[in-house]
Structures are given as C-alpha cells and as structure tokens.
Image (cartoon, rainbow, N blue to C red):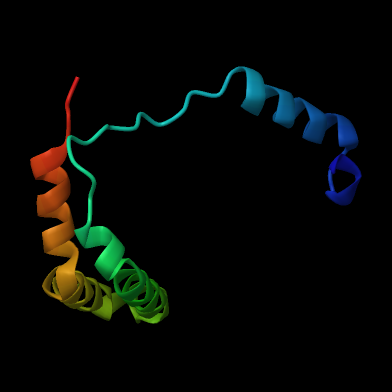
Length: 94
C-alpha cells in the first residue's frame, strides 16, 4: 500500500507501525442490554446528520450558530434523544 501514497514509503511504513504497535484505542463502553432504538433510526439520523454537516460548512459565518442549533434540535426531535437516553440507561460504567 505504501507506494500508493504521495509520501516517502518509509514514512508510510513508520506510520503504519506506530498505529499497530503504539496506538491507544478509544474506550468502548459495554451495555447491559442490546440497543434497539439506534438500529431503527440509524439510517435516518445518519442522513440528517450529513445534511446538517453540509449546511453548517456552507453557512455564512454569521448564520453558523443558528444553522447548527436548528440542526441539532432537529436531530434530537427526529430520534437522537431516544438513542441518547437508551444508551445512557444501558451503559455499564467501570
């Protein structure tokens, strides 16, 4: 794979070695029960999230806050709040 990148091959190989030898993964939190709400709403929320990100990036600087706040409120109303509540109710903390 390394020759396909526009960087010296040694740097790509070194980066790969570091990522496999010394990388620290983000902790995953187990849940007590299988999560179901996210599966039902997943595709819808993902597409709306993508729309929000695009609108936020394209928004004039003065409108960003309004675009972001409206988009987040829309995601929460669309079902993200239910996903958050289900995950919070089922998380097993260390």
